[in-house]
Structure formats: C-alpha cells, structure tokens
Image (cartoon, rainbow, N blue to C red; front, side):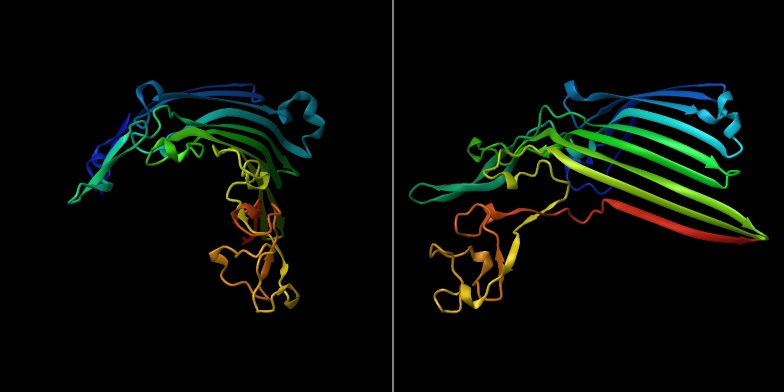
Length: 329
C-alpha cells in the first residue's frame, strides 16, 4: 500500500492523499541450466475506480530454452557459444489516465445561467459533469518472442525480439454521446483499443587487434500501431474514420495542384466554388497561385468533410543507433 500527498495541491480534492494497494508474487523454476519458467501475478487496487471495479489481477508468464546447453548442440558450440529462445505473455494494468475519483460525478457552480423576470437578475447555473461510474483498469496484453545468440568466442552477440501488444480499455471521453443528453462534458469509458507490433534488436561485436580492442554496438526498433476502437460515432464518410489508422496521424486536406488564371472564371482575380457559393472563412480569398484541395465528397466545395489521412504524425516507425569504441591497453 502506498499513500502520498501532492505538495502543490490548490484545492481540497487535490489535497487528499493518494492511495493505492497491491499484492505481487513470483514463482521461478530452472532445470539443469536449460529450461526456465517464470510466473508472475499482481493484484492491484486504485482509488480512481468505484469499489466494485477497484481491483485488477494482472498475470504474466515467461519461458526460456537454452539450446546451447543441450547434448545434441555440442558439435556447434565452438562456433555458436550460446543460443537461447524465450517467450513471454502477460497483462499489465494502468489507472493513471482515468483521473482521481473518476467514478464520481462533479457538481460545479458559477456556470452560465439565465435572466428571469421583468427586472432580470442574472442567475448563474450549476452543472453536473458525469464521469464514468463503470470505468476500471485499462489493460495491455504484451507478447514477446526472442532469441539470444553469442558466437565466435563470444565476440559477436545478437539479441532479436518480435513483439505484439494490444491495449484495451484505454480511458477516453465518449464521442458517441449526443449533446441533447444535457451533459456538460462527455463521460469517460474504457473504450480505446490499440494494436502495436514490431521488432527490435541489438548487435554487439568485439575484436582485439594487437593492443587495441574495438567494440561496435548497434540497436534498431521497428514499431507499427493501429487504432482498433476510439469510441467515435460512425462517420458520414469512410475517409474521416480514424479507426485503422496509426496513433497521432495527421488529418487534413489533400493538395491537388495550384490554381491558375484559367480557374478565375469570373475574371475578378478570385476563385469561387463551381456552385457560386463561398469557401469557408478560414481559407480567406482564394486566388490564382493558391493551393487547390481535392473535393473528396464531390459536393463542389471544400470543407471539413474533405479532410482525410494525410500523414502518420511525427513518431518514426523505425529507429536505430550505433556506436564504435576503441580501447588501448
């Protein structure tokens, strides 16, 4: 159990001590330096959730096989000094994204109100913000298959892993709650689902040349993610749906070309939609030389319904690094 206080709390709620509880256990077993098994389990509780949803159980399992210690591997051991396969599968939980006491509704005064009567007096309103009484732990199932190899008198060491994660129940405000319900803000729910998969690895090579020891190290990671569910309602056009796209993707207008003088049909120096209407105000006056955007829905004008996926954001899918060191005896 852990209790701690926010030293910079500026309201009563924030000054209440944080409280979390948890139990954890682990069992490991190894046989003859060849076979290894590990089982972990955590039972954690958070004040952020209602009593019925407060606790979550998060198990994990891992197994390893050191092939190089098998008798049949002996003829290869002078070349491949160490070979190990391993696999792990487990679930982890997260509660921080829900916010403190996320299951409680909040009543706030000093909100917009109405004027009543012949001699009107402004009466501020009171609003209720319904959070998420049924929210509970967000979970992520993580699976990993890896290999470790040491070769050539352990001068070459390679580690390679394939991984796949599915995060479920992420805390998001519901996008499918209509405004006429009367809530000041959309409630939260365990509705976000994201798939994440890829591979990573490292390569280390060490070589002695006379009195100089050279060492090279390189690392690399490839990661691809995809939104499976985000709680948004069904979109009018399929290209507006963010499901199936990477996290932090960029949505916007598709540049088709630049307007030319031939597009100025009225010969007044401005470009207007084919139906004679005006473009949205945020575009300002459109003139030859400005960007022509693609009219995706074919209604003759450019507006928010013409925005689609135009980029994958600023998080790279592939990262790498390397370094070289030299030591002199």
